[in-house]
Image (cartoon, rainbow, N blue to C red; front, top):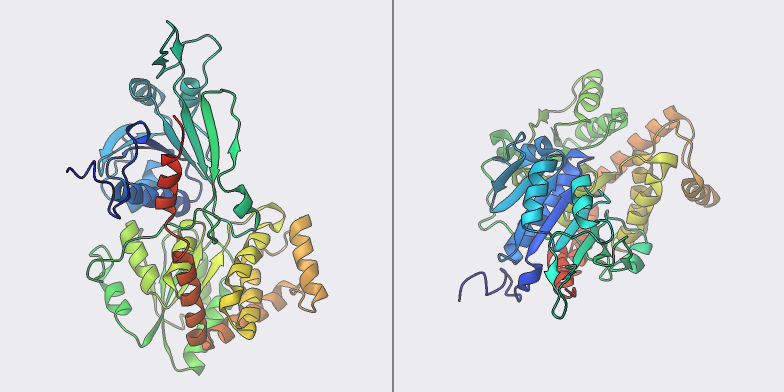
Length: 438
């Protein structure tokens, strides 16, 4: 029996033929986060369902090329890893392709919307012949083929994700069905994308040589830094103090991107108190290898946040800044998920530091963020109002957390194990697709 009929790598039943054409849409907002998740999801779908024919429509192929060697950032259409990859704005090329092979399952990732050319194909005026029409059994007219749009939503730890998962919604056409699929932290959501273990545990060759040597050592506190721009002076001061007072070797791996310059400025101003390795843009597998092996991670966005959750090492999440400081609500929802795995003292320090780290100085909180801040004040734990006081407390909190790293590591490892038990998002998504009615 051929591999196309025998199901995926885990022995699951193959997709029905009508559901084997899957289109993934990605409008890139946060370079690594959006396309990083879509690239990872496409690989997982192909691994678990090799019979699937994937088409990726991406708004920023340059960001895709940075993590996926071999992608041509200028090509309107190309083949990559057996997938067809299209530029979001290549309307003529895409219209011709999707008219010839109409989509049946569309994964709309992270509320990205749809290109105008795709909407024109999906939603035609009443009475117009629709691409992909299927001949009706008893009439001379064409019956529209059903198309399913699955909104693969942003990862959130907020409680509403459990209830929102797999909810259906209306579109402006009876032949286009819509459903919401929620990544998440509980068994009632779609879970997180799980990567297979590296065959021999070796470090991918794309990892810079100095990093590979560093990560093979157990006597170094390796810190991976990937964040949004902010004041990094408290972080530098805490690492410097930890190196000095604990007589520990500290090495920072500074990711390419928005946080590189402000971090390096703070590091230089502090007198370069520990070694820093500036990383180039890395292929995704090399980035994953660094994140999984670093002793402490500072991550941002969506994809690296999920990888850090599964790595089982202490990390701090820099949530995407939002109006009204709403990112603090999202951070606190995540903190509630990890709380059962940490001691009360460790969690108290970790929660306070995480909220300070994601807070933006001088930004007026909205109603929900204000409610959170008021609840902290009511508990006698109000966050400092002044920037100078906040910086000093950040330094003290991070230093205390670094000193508790061994105990924290055990809690983070238990948390990662609980997430893995929720199952693989890609398999859960494929199971969802198999249940669709066409």
